[in-house]
Image (cartoon, rainbow, N blue to C red):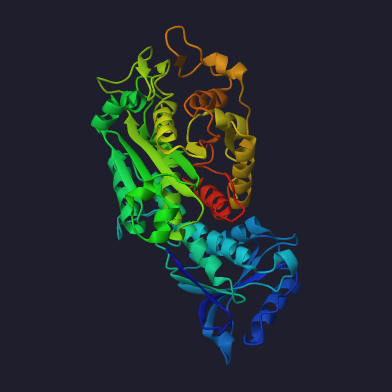
Length: 527
């Protein structure tokens, strides 16, 4: 990942100098930079080639000579547009810069921000958002590409998207005091990269055991507590949902549990006494970890089935967020992450439509459709987590239903919950993070659709209100605990096109969870 630093003085010693321009005005670059650079921007503006519109780009090559300008190979000017710029605007500006730097094959760059006033000034929050967008916009997944492999003759030789990017270092020029925010943004972006990497892995490259290994790695790195529940332990505990979904797979399931305790973080050691919640509230995060979902016996259509390697994006978001929590060690809140992980395949012992299973806690479920499997594994995790950890609140993330894409497209994730206050807090965190959420209703009229003639409930009804019915099913397993469900099936990949969100997996959810926990851990934060 690109290394980002901050500087208070612009020296001009850079492969590429990036100037962010507000509207049609020429920014005051500063007395320490050759005026030739400002003149180049003004000349382009007067000729009509550059007006500073949002996302508009100008590339120029300063003439050789004396002064700082002679040390800059390339001048990259990116427009911010005439409208006021907010946190999301800074992210998108950073993403636009990243895209241009990768296209130009820059090795290092310095970003100069115009002198804006009031809420638009380069505050720590703005600088963090700029760095966040820059890093997220520079993401590429090339793990499985053979370096040096021969390319087809028809491929354009100058296709920069197909070549390995060279960008290594970026400096953000700004006032003192922004470095901490930029460091935080770097850690957050790294977590999103990790979530995207997990999702980009094929089904044979990321398995339930890989979820378990990553959980253990985070535990060692950040002094967290990791617990991995295997198939035998699931059977003893009565986790019939996870076991049933796993029946068709040759790979065993795993329930990955990762615990951050504020008391432990302060003491710097793992004390068994600190395992009790005490007076510090616990937030429980649960992420769906279907590492590949064929639909089971209720087989999905073959077209597009390869995308079902993404069905673990909820689990990826939850564990990736824990990397940031472990690093930042928030006070005043304990965080427990759980990822039920398995495959859903049509093997000879696979779960069948009409089968009746018993979830953790004893409720029986008639399985109408084996492709409605995510709710079965989440139900076990939710019921077990609520009973064991007695959380003040629960949030689960899952690529749960295609119905949410029908309703909201790829622009909003569906939000459903049993507590208005918690729903509002999560929705506000999503807004701040640039991950918009849209609340859908719950109610007894929907719950009636899950009545079964032979069991306590069935896992699916007709196609009507599919997203809501899935959430109604999950609500059966959280009791009275404040709970929010995020259906991210439409945003985990093919999310709304943004300069800092590439095609494919978006890492959606990581930034919302981190934003929520950062706010929660403030002195005024209450569950």
